[in-house]
Length: 117
Image (cartoon, rainbow, N blue to C red):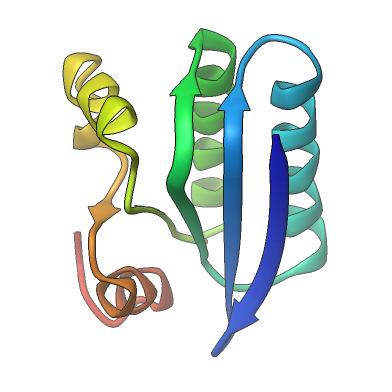
């Protein structure tokens, strides 16, 4: 799994590629989210276009960090989830708590607070 980070107008964009599952990849993903939480101030867009698998450990990390960012009054949006991840989000009803966007500008506007979910 690979993770890269960039910033656009005060929003951190995390691009993730590969598989997030129990072990090193889930830990790498969690470590990056913690760094973003500690080192930045604004909202976060997580680009999941190149993640083809996310197991329960990865989902647990995602939900846990959504709660941490929310407690810090920061927004998180998921951007372009791979069709397998999109199906998993629907199956687990997590799409009701995670804002999912298909257009980059829409995701950026949401995490900046320009629009409600």
